[in-house]
Image (tube, rainbow, N blue to C red; front, side, top):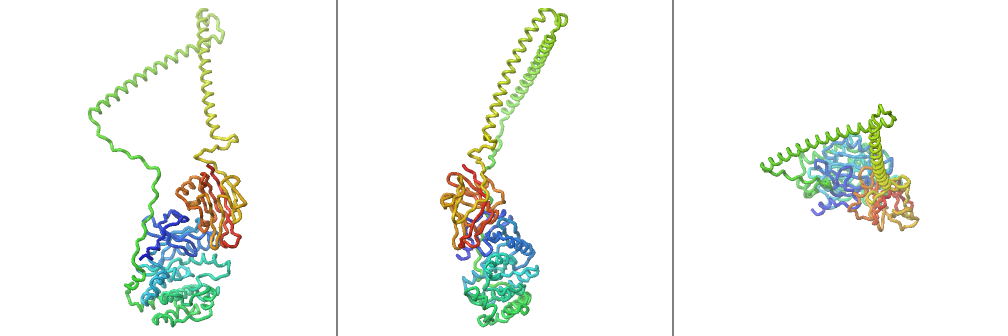
Length: 555
């Protein structure tokens, strides 16, 4: 029971919290193609999310094959396959989602209890053969059928990674000249780089069945080249197997692909010996182990800003309601009266202004006594005109001064928002982004968040470090994390990702071209690195490096 529970491992510091909207609940493991996580659909159904290794994603040939194989795998529908339900071959990094199978792999089951009884092996082989039949019907060859790719559910086996495993193996082995596949479970034509067909999967089925019955590979262990030599040049020792299984194994493990049984023939042979209507019995349940509770879906994060609570309305006293109505009526009457006074005052002001304008016009034209009236009237009007002019001049000067002060205030405010060169000024809450494109990192230099950013020694904020198996970004001072959202991160995205982050090391196995990595220095400076080129396939070769565009927001 303890071993079964351990299949759900907690997420580590370098694991994403979500992939393409799927919130991750646990880590299930890692394989040749990448890491596998437990998640759930919107309806709560558990799924396995496999995230492709970045060094594979960097290879254009891998992406083309991965895209083609994913589209083919979508068509596979079988009772003994783990259905592919979602994928993104163009993601950064690429990923796929299959229905989660609650049960151990055949490798784990044999390691826990030893060889399986014959009845369980027959049930296993029948289910896997039926799965291969569904896979082959869509034009796919599995190419890497092996015990770790067979999961043991309560109602029978499930075949996983069909049609996709070749994509990962091509990239990881071509550089060294090795053959595609897992050596202990290859067919002779596969080990000698010949044509791979559906019959190749049948040979792997025979080897997988032999492993289930013996508890070890039929062709033995040892260096890969030794195992491959025995597969190509020797006959398997079937005397090691239970006698009931030998005829079937002989058909599956024939050296000539044309002499091997078909999936339909394998299913028929096993069903005859299991009997009609046979279902997994107690022996199978003992193999799969007790049912394990699957972790619950991860809830969406609680929003930081919530709506204020609205108190329910309180009952209003009738007397208070009547008093309120009286106040409203009194306010309305007062407003009407005030409005009437305002209108009257405006009308009187307009009349006075009109008369003054007429007087000014008459004086301006130098009218005679007949048009301007008597001398005393003209003198009075002249005096009145001067007073009006002086009053308006003072008023205009006052307004001009106020306008100038207002304009000066606006100009001052505008000046505070811009620098002398016209570029936007920065504030403590919104630092200015400073770009540093094409930064190079290897095991001889480092980067710092202060200017100048590039150093020819190892004393910067970020160092590129490699060991025998992997390369990483490390820092003595700064926190490092990676974004798994859509490309185009900004300062806010980095601030959010860095909240609560504590790791000062980031394995570059999880990064690919286009990956976005956020870094925060204790001084408050934040940097965003967008990976452009990564070379970490041979970490201990001395030629590994990372090239990235860096943007720094300085506190």
